[in-house]
Length: 70
Image (cartoon, rainbow, N blue to C red; front, side, top):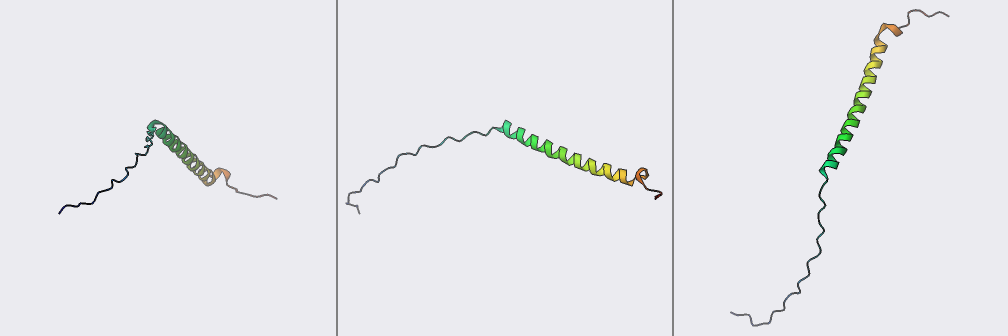
């Protein structure tokens, strides 16, 4: 059967303006990641080197006390 009713056309909304995606600056991201990695690695190496040096100096006999005079 046919539908004899008049169809109302739905109002078509205008396309919304799409925002353009900003391209990632991979070079800038890589440089930041490299700086963070180098800084954290350097800090870790300095801290571990200081701890090892302190342990080595304390374990050596150079700073040992043999006799106390009052």
